[in-house]
Length: 156
Figure 1 (cartoon, rainbow, N blue to C red):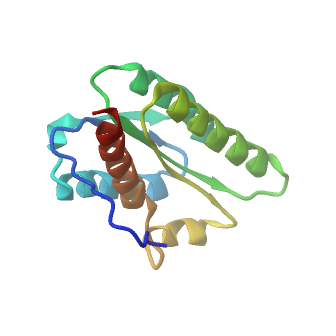
Figure 2 (cartoon, one colour):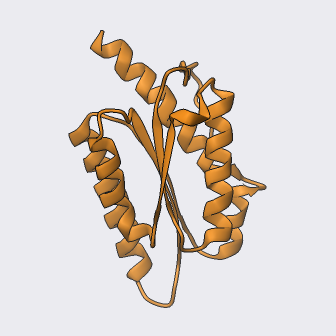
């Protein structure tokens, strides 16, 4: 869903990090690629990006927190994929990760783009990683850049 208002998203001079899960790499790598492309499309210099790989989605909050602790990082995109299983583990994992990413964003005062898919099956994940539903990696990068721009305006 696209926003009805026009939010400025200008990545010039911005430094953004990506933390991506290695689990379901076929899905997450597509979202990483799209996030990088979106950063460049928004005017960002690719040399202004940092990337780290997480073992899985559970490890993303720690890495995002470490990245946002750096003064040379303006925001971060968390990329992962949690697919429903036979138990409720996936729901606990998805909720814990998303809540902690939100807490980190607020505590650090820097935006975190959420591209951690929580899906019923791998087909839904692929549809959101460059398929029929778009690419959530690009969407999350656009959200980080726009939010960082808004924060800069507020802090002026």
